[in-house]
Structures are given as structure tokens and as C-alpha cells.
Image (tube, rainbow over all chains, first blue to last red; front, side):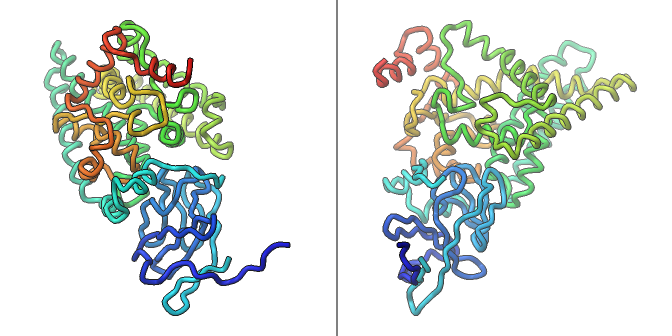
Length: 105
Length: 324
């Protein structure tokens, strides 16, 4: 039976890299938490094209660029905005509770 | 695709070669360095064009065209950077300039972008790296490659093949199916534009594009082949980034022409770092990469020593490590 999703502590707010992508590992899941200009968002960290870790790429506050091939994703929605990326990122619901960033996993 | 891929930059972060803060600082983008660089670039092109104009109807036009051609073929370096989106902060400017460069040197930009993605994924891996230049077997093979004849043969074959609506099996490997039509129309538009220019030349008896553009590119291309060989040729055909790529120390004017692409190992380490920050990245990681202090000439001495049997061929080491 599939496990029920619940809010899980992911990262203390103080550890969030300002205006950048912060890598977080929860169990075996590699997650990117983005400090976007529209708020905190989260997605599975691997590029849907070449599987590089997106946290190591260039982030401009709204879009994350893959460090390997420079494909582009909207970090707020997960949309794949530029080749070679075509498949959107899997986003994860995120919220701030007190001093903790939580993810709905 | 969600399997773990350990990119060189992720490896460098894990190893502590560079910190995340340092990497992110180096990745910051700006339009200003590229606008300054491009202004000098265009001035240099105007100067070498003037040389051709001044030497028209004399034998001096040939060295003038060669010098002009050396700059023209370096549009490859600019296009290469544009295809990584590391020239301009404004992303679409990279697409526009990349396409213009591709038109100048007959290298369709979208096709090159996809091909180059696979080059970065599979650098120096036989059968997977579509840009791999094999270490020549003989001196004749070395000079044959430098002549650029095989290069142009491949480029014209590609262009005509795409124009007819075909891609090779290797191309189908790196170009997603949805993009085949883009590649085909890119080639058709390019060929149509070239044909239009030739028709205008024939109708008006105005042949300047031959002298100021195409013939100059052909004369300059061996220099670009010479430079391209220094990036990976003679290095082992293995995945280890610390061994399969060379950084070359070159004179400042060559560094300017190549848009810092002589820092090639740094570029492969972190291809999102803009071209103007590569010298700073070099200072951070120079102790873990292959650096050729004698520059392009040194790299060719290394290649020539290998293919004349005065040092061990890199591909022999590779075969030995594979148990062949």
C-alpha cells in the first residue's frame, strides 16, 4: 500500500541559500529547494534531460539552468523552457513552518 | 531519466576543489564583457576587411584573406559559447548571435547545440562523442585533417543530407525526434540564403562575398582545425575529465579570438561559467586538470610525438587499460 503523503521537515530556513538553489537529500530523494523571487519552491533535483543535479547550475531568481547542457526550467512551475530540456520538473509542494522549510512528500 | 549522473562540476564540489559559493559567484552573468569584446571583434573584422580591399588585384590579397579568415573561423568560438548561453546574460541574444555565427561559418546552430550536448555528456568516449577527433595514425592523416578537406566534406554532406530531409543514425541519437524537422528546416533556410547570395552575385557581377567571406573562411579553417585538435586529441579516450581535456596557455590575442576557449578543461568542468570568468575558474582548479604551458604549439608537439612513435600513444594506453 502506498504511503500517505505528509509534511516533512526538509531544511532549516537559515540554511537556505539566498536567491539560489539549495540541495537537500531526504532518504534517497535528491531535492532542490529554490529561493525564487516569488517565494520558496521545491522540485526533484535531477534534470529531466541528462540527469545532472540542477542545484549546481546557474539560477537567476526564477529559472534554473542545467549545469551540463544549459537546458532551462522555470523553478516556480517546473516548466521546461529551453532545449534540450523538454520534460518539466516534478515539483514538490513546499511551505515554511516557523524556522523550517517543509515539503509535502 | 532520473539515474544519477556525476557531472564534473558536481564531482569538483564533492571533492572540495571548489566551493559552492565560489562556483555560484563565477556563474554570474553580465552583458557588458561580451558587448565590449564584440565591439573590438567587429573593429578587427573591419580592419582585416580593409586589408583585403587595399590589396585587391594584387597577390597580397591572399595573406590578407588568410588573416581575415582566421578571425572569421573564430566565429566558431563565439558560436560555441553562445550555444552554452555563456556570452550574454540576456539569453535570447545568445541564440541570435549563435545563429549569425553559424551562418558565417556554415555550422547550423540548432544542430550544433544538440551535437555539442552529447560531446559534453560523452567527452572522448569512442562511439558516443559525436565531436571526437581521433588521434591520427600517420603524419599524412594529421596533415589531411589540418587541410580541412575532410571537415568541409562532412559539413557539406550534412547540409545537403538535412536539406533532403534526412539525418544520420548518429544524429538521430542526439537530436530528439521532435526536433528533426527543426534541423531539416534550419539546413534548408541556410542553403536557401547561400543560394540567394550566389544568385545576387551572379546577377550583379558583385563577387565581394567570395573574397571577403567564403574564400577567406576556407583559407582560415586549417587554423581552426589546428586549434580544435589541441582540446582533446592525444589525450586518453576515457571519461575522466582530469585527463581527457587540455587547457592551453596561449597569447592574449589568440585568447581574445577564442573567447577564452583555450581554458578548455575549465569549460568542461563547469560549462555554465561564462567565458570571461574562465581565467578565474582556472586559478581555482588548475592543480587538478591537464595544462599545456607551451600552448597550441606544445599540444601539437605532444600529438606529433605520439603519432611518430616518440611517446606512447594515448589510445595505446586506453587499449591497455581496456585489456585489449
